[in-house]
Every structure is written in structure tokens, then in C-alpha cells.
Amino acid sequence: MVQDHPSDAGGIVTPGMLRSHRRRILALLGTLPFTAALAVSNDLNQPLAIEAEAKKKRKKPGHKKSQKRKPRNHSINNEERAMLDLINAYRRQNGLPALSLQRQLGSAARLHSRDQAAHHIPGHIGSNGSTIKDRIEASGYRYSWYGENVYWNSDDGSAQAAFDWWKSSPGHNANMLSVHYTQIGIAREQGKATGYWYWTTDFGRPG
Image (cartoon, rainbow, N blue to C red; front, side, top):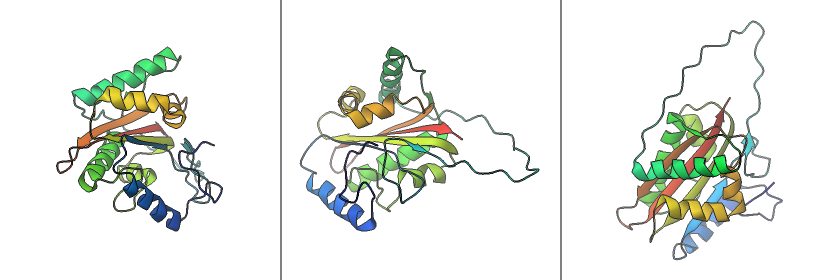
């Protein structure tokens, strides 16, 4: 399994390590750009990995499968649309199907980008301690796989800048080219006090 930030505990993340990780992030505020690629395992005793597969729930005998509503697309602006086009063109170049926009993933991505912009704290952990798993579950997304890329920069907040950086990083690149993902949520927000740009792409496959 690949990690952007290997730990001394064999990949297992503890609360103390998260606090230490955040202190290191704060120390990096003057170093730009910052990116991270991560997906979190459902089992907290498992190491962090680029992709996470949800555990299948056993159905009770006689349980009828409820009819699923067709997911609605979420609204994105022109720059976020440019990011979608860049990622899907890249996937097609590598023989992979395009990702479709998904409303709940988009809501989770928007929440996280706004949170990072408001608190000027990059990474996958929200200001309230939330993880990607927390955010996509709170949005109502039912998944079998999920992952996340984040990026922030004070100079160039364009889709091309974020995409190029992710493409050059093995972890981020793996998320963009994963065969397990079929849907995506995209958000870019700018911090009012700092002017920094914060990108979040949440990847998923419905379960």
C-alpha cells in the first residue's frame, strides 16, 4: 500500500500522530504548493491507503432491496469543469472510462475545501477532526470504494496547476487513474483572508 506520509507505526495512524501530523502541516504553511492523496480504510486498525474498499454488509433473510434513486450531478463552476475535463481526458488516454459528477461527493468536497479555506489548514483532516469517510457518509453517499486528493497554492489556483501536480505524484496519480472509481466530486475555494486556493477531489464507487 502506498502512503504519502508513512508513519513509524507501520502505517497505523493514532490520535497522537494526527496531532503531530497537523503540527507538521502548520509548519509547512510557508512551503507551497501542498498536496495530499489519501483514502481511509473502514477499519481504523488498518493502514492508510490510496484506495479503500468498503466492507460488504450482509443482507438479512427476506430483506428486499430498496429502489435506488439515480444520483444527481452537482453544480460546478468553469474552473472545476476544467478539472473534470482534464481528469477524464487523462483517464481516456490510459484506456479508462470517464468519471461522472456525483452530487453527494461534490457536497463533501465543497465542505472540505471551504473548511480548509476558512481555517487555512491543508490536508485530509477537517477542522472538526472529520475524515473523508465522515464527510462522504454525512453527505449520504453509499460507497464500495472512495478516495481523495487535495491541493492548495497561493500563486496559481488553476485546474491545470493542481492537475499537473497530482499527475507528477504517484499517490495522486493513482487516484486519478484508479479502475475502482466511477464517480467524482470536485470543489475549489479561495480563502478570503489569505488568498490561497484549495482544491478537493473526492472519488467514489457506489455500493
